[in-house]
Image 1 (cartoon, one colour):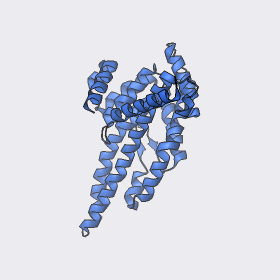
Image 2 (tube, one colour):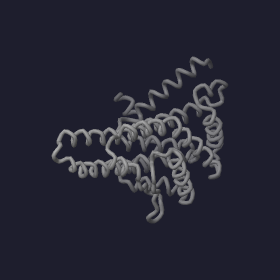
Image 3 (spheres, helix red, strand yellow):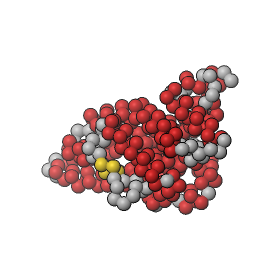
Image 4 (cartoon, one colour):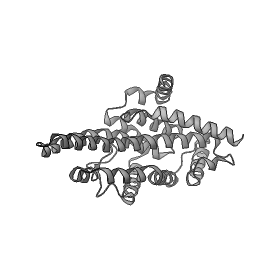
Length: 269
């Protein structure tokens, strides 16, 4: 297989992933794609499963944040144009987070399926960063043999993927967006989320001091994996129901549901 053929397959996968990831507000569709990747890996790829929780949790967080911003905008009651501009900035800031989730979904889908098909090709490293290529090849080897990796191995793969996304997508985009969001009070509140995924026990939350800090995002991301490991992966998967966004068919016949969704979305595109 030539390098040109590899490039064409990579580009075709990227086009498919871009369509499947949907628009900015299609969080449930992205959660379905993420869950597909987890299940297709034989339960070995923890990153997309936890990312599915992130996508579904974020839907409620965005709605709450926009309502709060609308309430706080009344401080500009006597300045209607300024109030309008601040609300526009808030909506654009929320869209940055949605776009990050979308781009991470695309990247995760492409990386998984490209390495699944061609991860051992000598030129694969030209398309998949070396820090991801080896862990994903180990993941596929385990999945192809019907072997579920121990959590210590799952964490190595998860952390490699998590750090990759933080470095190449989340970090640069978020840094730029924070610098441009000129509404200090709302910006400060937005960067201190109390994240609670549905698989967390009791009242446990991930309290952020500054979401713009990459070190803190990595720290909390690793903690999210640890809490998932403690809960058990079947519990983490089943907890996606608790957001009441994904349809029952997604859980009853997940492979069929994803393939039907994929066919419909690609056909519509």
